[in-house]
Length: 435
Image 1 (cartoon, rainbow, N blue to C red):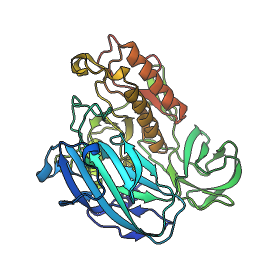
Image 2: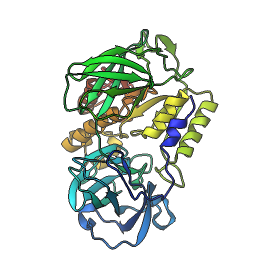
Image 3: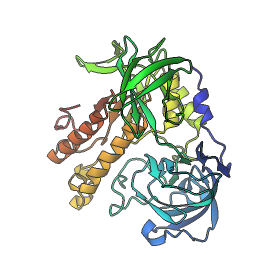
Image 4: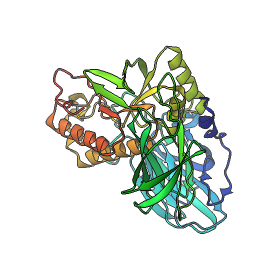
C-alpha cells in the first residue's frame, strides 16, 4: 500500500492557519510570537502579555536553532485564530512537546502538563465565534522539582518546543479496534467517548461494506467483510466508520487485523513464527531536533527496510502518530515505550539525594504517560510491543512494584500487545516475572 495517507498529514513549515469551521480541526501550525527566557521556569516568566522578540515556527525546537542552540529555559509562545461558529467544546491537540507546558486560551488556564513527547488532548470548554488567543509556555529544563519524567542523566538530548504540531479539534470520539480472531476476521469495535454505551449502529468497512452492529457496554463484535491480514510481508489495512441515529458523522478509523503472541520462548504473528531483525531509532535530527519532518521519517524507514530489517524500537519515548502511520503502511514492526532511562539505578540517583522509585509524582506520571501512549497508538497494527522504564533498577523491590503497575496499566487497556522492558542487569532482575 502506498504511503499516501501519511503524506496527507504533512504541513508546510510556517504556513499560517487563519481559521476553520467547527466541523473540522483548526491547524495551529505556523509562525507564532516568541520570546525565550534563558534559565527561567514557567512559574517565573509565564505572562500572556509578554513582549515578543522573535517569531518561532511550530512545529519546531528552539534549541535546535543557531540563536538558542542547546539553551535551557522557557519559551513563550502566542498566536491568534478565528472560529466562524461557536462550539460547545473543543480539545487542544499537542502532538509532542518538550518538556513541560503551560497552556492558556483567552487568558483561561488549561493546566500545566508534564508529559514530554506525549500526545496531549486538552479540553478547552465552549468557545464563541470570533478571534481567540492561544498562549503557551514550554520549559525545557530537566529540573527535578518540576519535571519528573525527563532527567539530566538520560543518554539523549531533550529538546524544547513543539515536536509535531498543534491543532484544535471539536470531536473527541474515537473507535478502538481489537482483533479477536485473525482466522475469521472477527474484530471488536469499542466506541469511546460517545456519551452512550448501548446503541445500534451501522459499521462501514473500507468505505463500501455495511455491517449492522449492536453495541453493548460500548462494544460490538463483527466480522470484517473480505478481510486481509496485516503482516510485514503484506501490510494490508482496513478502515471502519460508524453511522448511528443521533450521532454526528465520525471520520473513518484505520486499522489492521493481526495477532501477536509469545509462547514456547518464541514470537508468533498471525500463527506464524516471527523473528525480529531491527534497530533502535531516536526521533531526533541534528538540524531540527525532535521536530522531524515526514521526509526524514520516511528516509529512516527506507534505510531500515533496506537493511533487510522488519522491526524498529522507538527509543525511549512515545512515537509520533505520523511515523506509526508510515510503519503501518511499510509493514515495519514497532516496539513503543514510554519515557524513561536508567531510572532508580545507583548511577542515576544524584548521590542518593533523589530516588525516583520512592517519589509518588514520578510513579503516577509514569503510569499516566504509559496509559496515554497505549491509547494514542491503539489502532496501529505495526505496534506489537509496549514497554517502559528502559534499563531501570529492576533489581529493587520498589522497581518491581512500579513495573507491575505499568504492566497492569497496559494490560487493562486490552490492546493485544506484548509487554516488556529493556534490562541491563539480567543477573539481578526481579521485575520480569509478569512480562
